[in-house]
Length: 508
Image 1 (spheres, rainbow, N blue to C red):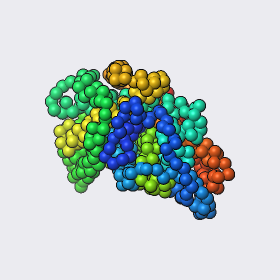
Image 2: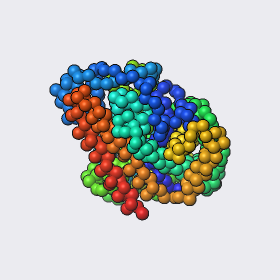
Image 3: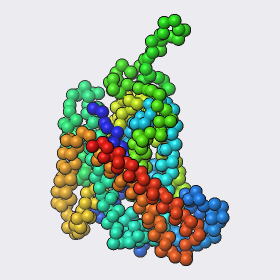
Image 4: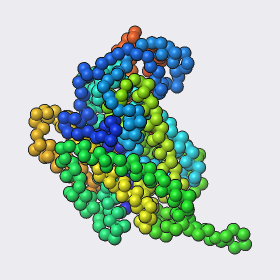
């Protein structure tokens, strides 16, 4: 079964980012006491000090004079008790950003183009959106530095105000629920494909019910999810392996279309790729003449909407800032810039390779295009399945605790019995929806275009503006000049959200 682009795009939200801790090779105990998705932690433990810094991700409008002014002006920064080194944080942030959803980017390119040159504007968009996403991630950490906030909601409470802190809380909860639903749908298709490769015939529904009952439910009921830490490495390792395997298959021509010899021409026949015959007709390479210029088509916004959530790791920006050793703004921005740079490279590489191999036939999950008999790519399927299975409970617990918070269930009432019943109820609903819904084009496109854009572009900019406003005369000229650029980033998010929502309604 072909996975639709929008359902796969929900993976780009990287819901595992809700749970990955910045500290190297360690995952949090995601219980109701530790969830930071929608609750603000006390900010008293973060001490504000005056220091000199030069943010690495400043507005493009800041010239040398503004930078000099910023260096000379005191601005609040945080030096807490974090122990994570920059390399550790970079590894963990890349791990949080780069999820299985990167495998849907070729389909995003195929949405507007079918000629090889379409990768030129596609790569440009991947870089531009990645830059703005990194800027939003940087803003959140800086707001925590200025205000002492220790969670996404806490940063909003300390900057914009406690009375409206429910807004990011609701957004985070609903975004996570949509992502978990997408996980279930893609797991059903992935497990079914693996079973069929092994010669076991089954349906998507049975595959999903089987993996949910035997694996997902027990994992979601675990009280301590730190034991899943080793499996978090599978995801990022699998992405690097998949990129290498895709390079090998593309350069080796294993899936190229064959051409017959033309009578009267010196051109010899070109044999088809080794695995092409094992690929379903609708997944075989298809190319046309819609190249770079096709980026002017409205269909390019399908890729833009996917990219608007591709870099989603912003839920945990406060944790990355707080747990960084000697967490100055400069060191934090070094982590952000390096991590997003690596992620942009992987996104551009995998997106381009998949599209150059299969063109407009690129599936919403590019692994579907590769033959089941291709052992090299079958290993990628296994790695992706393992990654999703062990990321699922991390995202699910964030969604479950978010609902408990929104329903204002007191901490002392969250007994094991309550958590178990809540888990069964939510997981049953999500699984049922995943078995019944075959096309999540509208739901996932709308959620990504609105909720994702809000968390990445709009909320961070609003928090930054409020934080600078509260500084009053203590805010440097550089910070004041940066506010308009931050608001431009917010307007960009609004614009992408409106276009994405419109396209989503067009799918009804």
